[in-house]
Each structure stands twice: as C-alpha cells, then as structure tokens.
Image 1 (cartoon, helix red, strand yellow):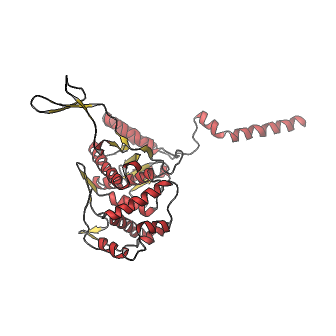
Image 2 (spheres, rainbow, N blue to C red; image 1 turned 180 degrees about the vertical axis):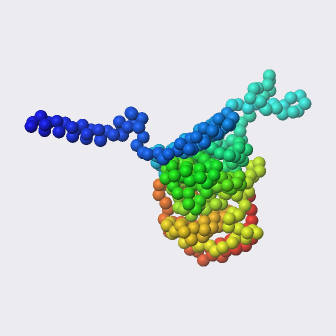
Image 3 (cartoon, rainbow, N blue to C red; image 1 turned 45 degrees about the vertical axis):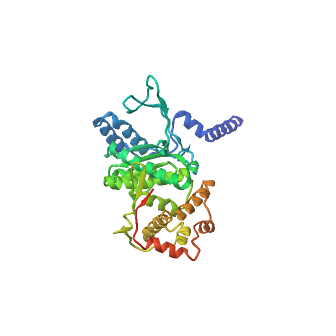
Length: 367
C-alpha cells in the first residue's frame, strides 16, 4: 500500500514538473505551441512560381511562404515597427573632382590628385525604412515606384513632426495575387477579409494587400504602410488619425524632391467633396462606431479632417503638437478634452474655417 501511494505521489510530481516546464520542453524539441492552418496549396503554388521564375524572385517567394505561415506574433510592443531613429544612410565615400576641361566627376575612387570626399547633404540620403515586399504578380518596377512614394510620405511626415522625432520603420508587405489567396493569408493571421482589400496586423507588423489592379494595389499598399509608420513613430493612435492619414496619403505622387497629394478619389468628384461629414468632435469620441453603415462616413470624415489640417500652416502646426504629445506615451492615447484643445474644435470660428476648406473646390497639396 505504501509503495502504491509513493508511486502515485511521484507520478503527480513528474506531471506537475512537465506542466510547469512545458514551454521550455517545447522549445528544446522544436515543437510549435499553436496550430497552423493547412497551407499545402500555398506552398505548392510558391514552389511552382519559384521554379518558373528567375533568381531575382526567389527572395520574394520565400517571403510569401514565411508570411503565409506566421501563426503567432513576436513579443508585442506599442511601437513594435520602429527600428530606432532615422539616420544618414551608410555608403562608401564618394569623391568628386574637375578635370582640365572643367567637367565634374564622381567616383568611389579618388583621382590622382585634387579630389575631395563628397558628403550627402539632402534628406534623400536619410534611411527612413526597411521594406520587405512580396510583390506577387507585379514586378520590380512596382517596388521601385512604391519605394519612391513611401520616401515621399516619410519626407512629408518629417516636415510635420521634425527629423528628431522620426523613427526608422520596418515595413513588411505581401501582395496576394487574387481574392482566394488574400482570404487564405488572412485566415492564417486570424483576420477576416470581409469588406476590405488590405489589412495591417499590428502584432505581426505585416500588411497584406489583395491585388485587383496595379493602381489599386499601390494605393492600398501605401494606405497599409502608413498604419505601420504611425505605429512605429507614434505608437497607438486613435482610429480617426490612423485612418485619416492613411486615406490622405493614398494618392501621393512624387517628382524629384517634390510631393503632391491629390484629394482622395473615393470621396471626391470633380474636385468637390461628395457626401456629408461628421464634426471632428464626433470623430474623437467614435472609438466603437466604425462598422456597418457608418463606416464610409467615418473614413470620409477622417480623411477630410486630415486634409483640412494639411491645408494650412496653422493646421500643420496643430498636427505637429498633437503627434508630439501622442509620441510621448506610445501605449496611451490623449483624452477627448486634450484633442479638442489642440485642434480648437470647440472654438466659434472653427465651423466657418472647416466649412471654408471642405465645402469649396479641393486642391492638390504640394510639399
């Protein structure tokens, strides 16, 4: 009887030890602590693409496979997309000199004499982001255009908030080739594809975009990238700001060092806003009202308020003040009263000022 009791106690202690150390045991055995949905079909498609593609697309295919099976997030932080402060992009020394004909030369090797090292002097050399992009059916040219427009977004943010407040951002974007692939990827990430063609998952720091056309994929990729930028630079932000800025930057275009932002085509016809707007005070309080019939109104109103702020130096100064305060505590949000005070939305002249911008012919913003 005593042996039976001792064995029972010993078994109980062993089971308890196994339970308490289950995570360590799983790690040592290489076991996963979550269930990954079946992605055999996705892997077969990726393998076929890899075999039929050149070496340049191998990295993109591997990236899609990685993203398609990411079942659990890494340790979550409120600004998890941040890679630290923006720095000058590292590069080897570039030398410049003039020959006897007066022609200026640039090279990574100095001339025999008279060469001086050339230093970067413009924000073109700022290292704003690291981009991991699986462009699916799109090509390298799409990536080049996306990078150019994202650089323009970062330059505009820097012009608002200041370089010292900017953060380098890790951007991970996957373009799903069709609706079926998009739904499958979102299933793996635990999200629904209903009513959307793009999504940014904060906990995973990954954006997935459904491909319908090249122009649509570009706009949606920029929209979702702005969510990642907001998360990295500011941390948690209210939805009116997060969606308003994403809608605002969707139509950004760039030429050399100039950026132009057209009014969002989803809300504008013939340069005039179509549809009603919520007062910004209602946006500030509408944390749980973004579903169903109200959704279009919320997105349109958020875009319109950001467009209004970006239309004047005063508005951009208010936006800078707001963003700097939100940045101080990435895991918390400013109160309704604080936001009203910053943007002066309770002041008598605000209604006239807001209507003057939103009810008149809308113009392109250039920075």
